[in-house]
Image 1 (tube, rainbow, N blue to C red):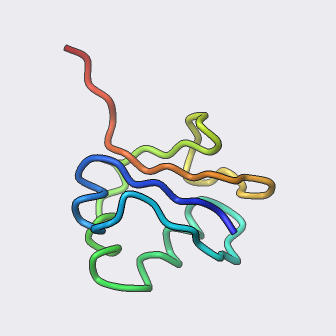
Image 2: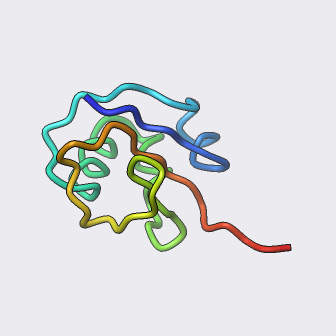
Length: 82
């Protein structure tokens, strides 16, 4: 079980700020595949991975990063300076 957090437009599209997810996925990409198979709102949120970033236990990671031992997965758009 992992806690999945959604920020900014990802949260708006899914309609939740966070949820606990039981997953069989080995990687972030596998988790995304499981989520997008759930409902259209997840598919919409994860449709463009180029405009999405992920952090595992509050450290930036790649989509091929393993989930073994991870407690928290956060999805958010790229940060912009200003």
